[in-house]
Figure 1 (cartoon, one colour):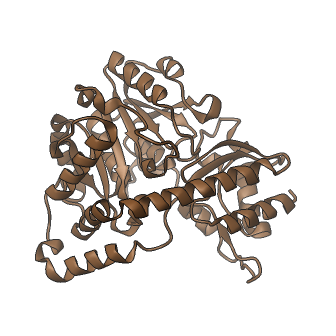
Figure 2 (figure 1 turned 180 degrees about the horizontal axis):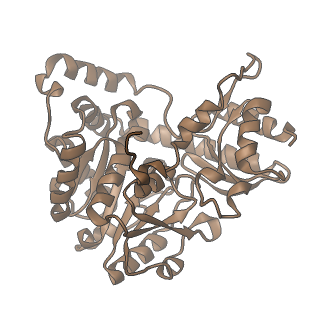
Length: 391
């Protein structure tokens, strides 16, 4: 038998792909089609104008088919720096920006620059499973941090988990999988904690465009020394429906970009040109359209919360952006419940066991519902199916 990397072999399989396998051999009648709330990704293509911009670039711009700069196209990096400076009240330059193949790659690059085998990184529980997977693959210990009220982690609790091997604190806001929007004070407390201990604070803001609050979600970029502590991650995929083009961003100090460039050049050389062109066109032309998308997601969040709160025995623990994190009322594990919901209710969602340590007693009681891709009528149908399901 060929050798196998034990760190990779011990990492769990991709949860979304695992859930899709539950559909094999199951048929869904026309009067009750599948309601798929398992994955947080747009299911519609980008607006026509953006698609035309990509198509025109493919036909008329020879450089769109060649390698680009490892850290991303200069015009997109400049646009991100300008928008972030405006939105967060800081002063960013293109040298603070790297364009990556999706936000997952941005996370991988960030971790590669701060931690190695045997180190530790503190991540809130429930975690985003791809974050946990990458840490395991690299031999980095993911130290679970239980969240407090409203699914918001607390810096005081994180401080008790810091050891000599701790290299970073990771936050995701709005959160995947809980939907929680972390208060600015929470991010500031974690920032101060990271500064105190010489740690990196990695903040994944993939869903920042769908935050229900007005204004900047935090003021960390206003600190002139933010680059000594903060690494921010972002995804264009959710905002402009560019999931198939894989375009994300990593915001960090110019000094850290030297290390980021080493990683990106090794794993991809450069992010796809057409995706970057599409992302820049979206930033330039789709501000009003994106505001409409945000409003619709917030409306779906409100419908989701209201519907869940009306279900007997169910409890909403967190709800925002694309996700609801809920506690179910049944005397079976969420791992079994999720599979039964496919067969018996025509609903595909993910169990809490995919987002928490195996030993966490809360994992079997929870489910993640990615509701952003279903309209309000389908949300009501989802409530009906959950209400009538008998375990």
